[in-house]
Structures are given as C-alpha cells and as structure tokens.
Length: 157
Ligand code: SME
Image (cartoon, rainbow, N blue to C red):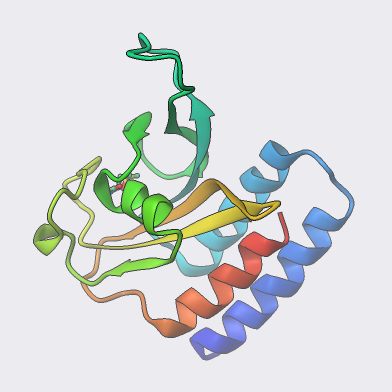
C-alpha cells in the first residue's frame, strides 16, 4: 500500500471512531493511537492550548501548550507560545515540517531518538486549540502527503 492509500484508510477509520463520540480528549486519544499504529512512528500525540497556572506577570490570561493524549515514550509537559516546533506551529498557525530536528533552531528534544517531526495545528471556531505532534526516528519522514492528510484528520476532532 502506498502512503496515500494508508492515509485514506486511516482517515476513514478516524472518521468512524470520532463520529460516535463528542469528548475531545477521548477522540484525540483514539486518533493518536490510530496514526501511531498505522505508521509505527516514534511518538504521536497532542498538546492542548491551556491557561497557564504559573504566576501571572500581568492581568492578561497567559496560555501555553500542555501535554495531551499520546502514544510513545514520556514527553515534556509544557511548551510556551512560539517555542520549539510545537510552539512555532501554534504561533504561525500552520503545519511545520522539520526534516532534521537537529537543524531546527529552538527544537525541544523530549527524546534523543527523534530525528524528524511534523506539527499540525488543530482548530475550533477559527482558533488554534491544540497541535498534533509526530516524531520519527528517521530523517526526512514527513512531506506534503503527511501534511495534507493529517490536516484532514485533525478537522474530524
Ligand atoms: N519536539 C517538540 C517537543 C515535543 S516532543 O517532540 C514530544 C518541539 O520542539 O516542540
């Protein structure tokens, strides 16, 4: 099966799984599992935009990414806006593909095994509410096909 065929199957499975459930966390958990199992990635999961509970420097509400449902090894729990690949995808409000994480300035290494990465923003009412983050042990794993289908998959949530 080509990667595109695998994604088409995955998209149908994800749509079926999400259709009967309204809970975002439950759906993120199953979608992460489906993607992870299909391709055998190193780490697949979500970070959600949450109000920070750290000390507030002013009266504006601060937000940061907080670890959500995932598959794979232990990961860092909080990522500030604009930091790392995840925070960059959130700030730019666009999918970020990183062929070699060691060449990405500010990359946050949760695992020394990761060599390439893709981060896809998740939207609700026009706002970024989370990001889908996938890490691979291989270099150059992700391309426009991954971007196209992963963007469709996160729209199901
Ligand atoms: N590498 C990510 C951090 C999350 S872990 O990869 C699971 C980043 O630079 O934002």
